[in-house]
Amino acid sequence: MKLYNTLSRQLEEFDPRAQTTRLYVCGITPYDTTHLGHAATYCAFDILIRYLEYQGGKVIFTENVTDIDDDTIREAPKRGTTWRDLGNYWTAHFIRDMIALNTRPPDFYPRATDVMSEIIEFAQTLIAKGFAYASGGSVYFHVNAYEKFGQLSRIPREQMLAVANERGNFPDDPKKRDPLDFVLWQAQAPGEPAWASPWGPGRPGWHIECSAMNYKTFGPIIEIHGGGADLVFPHHECEIAQMVNFTGEDYFARIWMHTAMVGYQGEKMSKSLGNLVMVSDLLKTYTPDAIRLYLAKHHYRAAWEFTYADLEASIVQCAHLIQAAQATGGEGGAMDFAAARAAFEHALDNDLDAPTATKVLCQYGDAIIEHADARRDVRAAQAWLRRAATLLGLRLDAFGPEAYVRFGWEQHSNRFPTA
Ligand SMILES: [Zn+2]
Image (tube, rainbow, N blue to C red):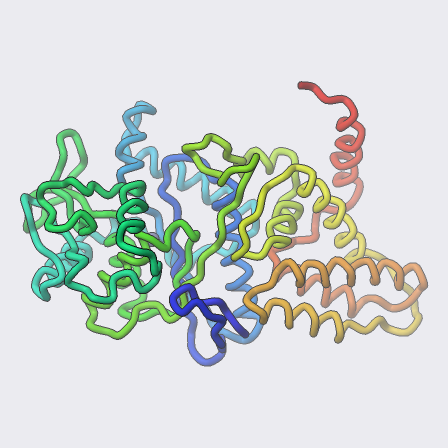
């Protein structure tokens, strides 16, 4: 199959059977609820895992929890709680959303606070090798010491600085040699949680947390590193700089995969803009299958815009798929699925083209219903349909009268708007 590598800006051949695939996907910072942008990312990687395994590959999947970070420390007192309780609360919430959406659990689910000793080891080694320096109780990575810094994002220095400043960088920090130098360890600020270190009490920087969790789980090299496109710079750029200079390897992740942003009401869905669509709210009205199908209809690398009308359309398609999976055929000639299977696999082989795979699946489902009506044997076709649906994370189990109750009433209630 082919996967797009952000690092090379090219589609690259990836054979899931050639090795075990070590996959690391950056997880949430647990200080708020899961929105549809998060769901789009984790459901896209869920399809990747399922498809690699379908092809006979073995996948080890690590996702992290950034439990100690500027956001959790800043938000906890506002909500009258501690960063740890806040993190546990929202991590549990995220896990419930991921279960509802039928995403595969990670094999490893480390928290940043689980890897403090590895983080300190990283910082010490990078200092010893001349890539980092201690200053006033903090430790910084010196970007000019690594000539390949910028290889992933390929953006000019001025732009790097602007983006980094939006993501927690302090360009005017007097302890830094260069405004772009990023923090590996930050000295304790008044009232902040701290851990002991050779440089005094403090806490880790954001980027080093993921490097340490990656290294502790997988060692120096992984096959695929994923995350949202907003992590390319600075987060993933900095992860590469830390990891390869720590390990001495030529590279860290062979393929870097990034999911595009989801928009709503004309803007990127983001907390700061206040235009979030929460997964838990959608689950009150829509079935998990409808949400999964709706997400699968958008290619993971193409930015798209959420609308309720499009989500409604997915309910109807799900109903058809479930009807196809449960239809009773006859004793006529068995329905063939080889062409549908080939088209479905061809789509996913092509950089995980789930929208095309979804279209193939829905068309084939409609064909099953027609063939069943014509009294043909559709049992093998249905077995394949169910198998293919699982690759998109669909359960196809919410049919029957109960599904119609909600869907049927919603069709009527749309004519009686309440607001
Ligand atoms: Zn990360």
